[in-house]
Structure formats: C-alpha cells, structure tokens
Length: 94
Image (cartoon, rainbow, N blue to C red; front, side, top):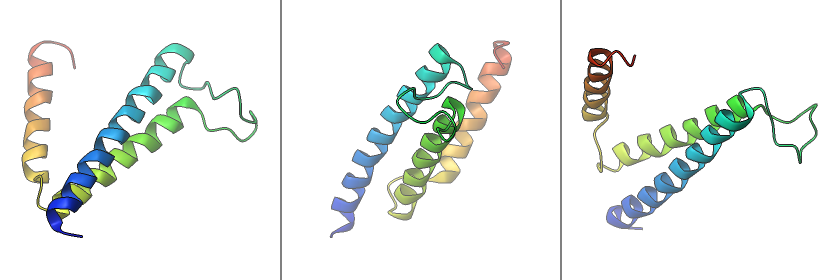
C-alpha cells in the first residue's frame, strides 16, 4: 500500500477513534466514571473511566502512526498542547 493511501486510511481510523472518545466521555458525564455498560457483567465490565482511557489510548496510537507516516509532527502537537494549557490558565480554566 502506498504511503499516501496508508496516511488517508490512518486519518479515517483517527476520526473513528475520536468519535469513540466522544461517546466514552459522554458516558462519564451522564453516568459517572465508575458506571459501566449495563449489558455487561458488572463483575468484569470496565468502568466508564477505564473505557475512556482505552479509547484515548487508541487515539494516541493512531497519532503515533500518523507521525510515523509523516502526516503530522508530534513536536508541533506538543507545542500546540502547551499553548492550549497556557491559554486555559490565562482564562482561569485550568
């Protein structure tokens, strides 16, 4: 598979994983971090917080893949993160 096609496919995977993060985050908002999927066995079901962490890990994995393919730069992402933190702190939202 060509790098261009691999990059596009990885971007599709990233978008899918981001949607799953949104869904997991909203479950934490609505049902709390210790809630879980009622369709699963409560003794073994991951908590909503654990599910959110797993989905965020999936996003991070796709991010690493996109850097490996040369689509994005982790250095620029890190810089953007620091800028966002500074902005939130300036707005007393951190």
